[in-house]
Length: 145
Image (spheres, helix red, strand yellow):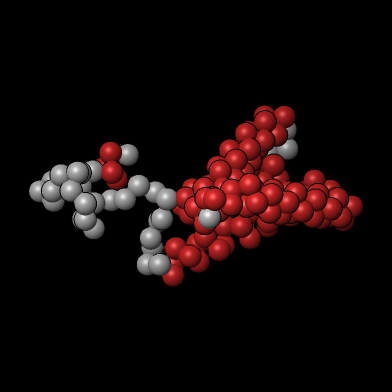
């Protein structure tokens, strides 16, 4: 990891600001990685039908969702720090609505195809969350922040 944070030899010290130094990854990268980990969790759920698969999937899903949640909160709190409580209310209301819609969707697809359909539905939603972050990265020339 040090090779990402340190400049190449002869390119100045890490204390000097400038484009020649790698910037630390920003919240958008963490959001994309969180969505990718959540996608991996749903793939584990769908492909490894056992207790160890369930345990690994739950750990991956929790890590992916929580890292994305914290990074999204970081972004919205930077919008208007003086309005943090209002932003939190809107953010968590949207999270609740999204969770309710996801639960309703999972119930519907369960009746259509069981656990594999639910796993595919979860993977699809995770891919849908990953898409905008990947597009953002492509539009900004591969920028990770």
